[in-house]
Picture 1: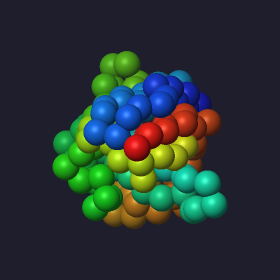
Picture 2: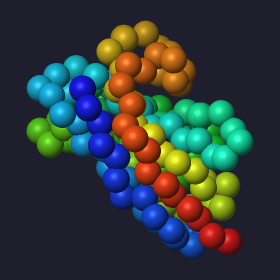
Picture 3: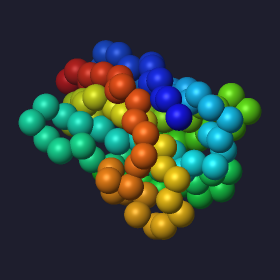
Length: 124
């Protein structure tokens, strides 16, 4: 599976942005998909995840109520809608694909494939 993230950019605090991740391959619908982010000098951290059919979603406490993850299996694309953005949301956002069915969707080590990342910058 190859992942291509896009949609990052510069936005003012309080604004919105949607990032997308397109996957190649026919097995997209069998993967849990996740979004992680990495700020300069920090570890890559979990943001959100969605199961294979979109029936279950998971969020980090820091983004709960502001971000929404979704997927379109027909388009092999996962989205992250980000509202009420804060300067602390500034990071490179990465999408990941995971085959495992365990509950460890928040661990980056559980993901088998990664996209190249897209920069999101929120100005104050």
